[in-house]
Amino acid sequence: MAINWYPGHMHKAQREIRKILGEVDLFIEVLDARIPYSSENPMIAQIRGDKPCIKILNKCDLADPATTELWLDYFRQSKNTDAIAVSAKTPASLRNIIELCKTMAPNRNQPGKPVRALIAGIPNVGKSTTINILANRIIAKTGNEPAVTKSQQRINIGDGVILYDTPGMLWPKVENENSGYRLAITGAIKETAFDLDDIATYAAEYLTEAYPQALKERYKLDEFADNGYDTLELIGRKRGCLRAGGRVEMNKAAKILLTELRDMQIAPITMETPTMCIAEQKEVDAR
Ligand code: GDP
Image (tube, rainbow, N blue to C red):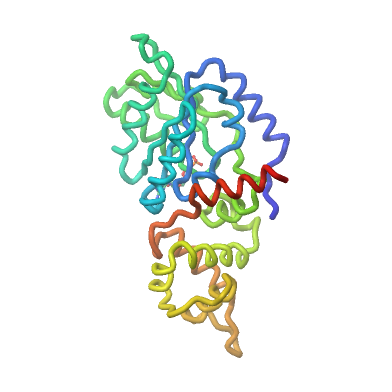
């Protein structure tokens, strides 16, 4: 599966982050709550050393609440790490980030010294939305903060917290091909890089295991086929994606499943669990 993350870009982003590393007190990593493992940037873990890290599980409105709880517990087991689930749909949920920054910062007992937090995230996790919400709240309060733009790197969000936006573009877990599928399913990677039938087959396979009831109800299926591809075919048949001669148009079926999965028409769904990802990571590490 081809993903276009060039080593040149990776090195540049790493260099840029290292330049400002000494200035920041902690990291905020914005993740997609539907894929908290696959949307992590592998470099952050390496580069941050002992600095505290807050994992933001954003888009929690789209994710399975029970699995979100599992992920929060999972992240909190790591050293110097806390995690919260938020959603841009409920901007108030983001306020807790500011308090968390203050609790986690090593300089929390130095009055008057702002906490400087580097906010990072792979594309499409909602990093910009998060920054805008955090900043807008302050703009509304003080009325004299400039509007946040993409080019601005340091954003004083008031309340004693300064956000440092990460320079450069961060990449996801490219070494795990399962992550590639899940990033494509959630829309983090453009579909054009993939074979649509392949991604939808992966999705169908996972959903029959993890959300069988919701899948059956949505597509009025009595039973699943014994593999993802054939289950996708059943879905296509139910939705009338038929060619002449009664063959299922798989591309159409794939589009239906992926669109409805992303639009939360099946259920709030998380595409990976901590148990799954620990096992996958072990395999990747053993290679
Ligand atoms: P960035 O690339 O990480 O800066 O991501 P953006 O902030 O541009 O957000 C990517 C897309 O996700 C946009 O279409 C946002 O509207 C959407 N988005 C961001 N946060 C949320 C959220 O909490 N819930 C939902 N449902 N959509 C969100």
